[in-house]
Image 1 (cartoon, rainbow, N blue to C red):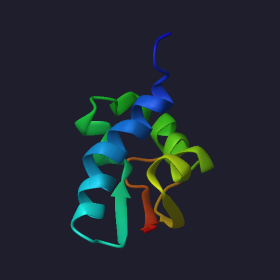
Image 2 (image 1 turned 45 degrees about the horizontal axis):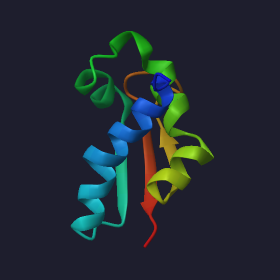
Image 3 (image 1 turned 90 degrees about the horizontal axis):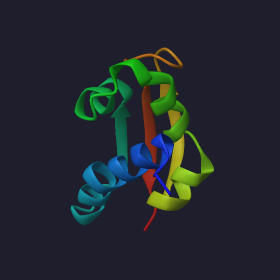
Image 4 (image 1 turned 120 degrees about the vertical axis):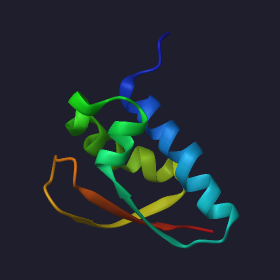
Length: 86
């Protein structure tokens, strides 16, 4: 079965951002949705990125806790903040 877009987004962010930060013992992180859109060539799918990263499924996958958002809710400049759980 093909991997769903939301799962691809979650896996990408976990593998390229969360895991390296965890390895470097960084406890809080801010992720700008536009950066993910650009990195994954998903500029027309910004709401999908926002949705994928603001789910309990992502928190469980990456072992993080969402602690806030800034900026437009479904825009390129939406910034989602997470605490990395040890």
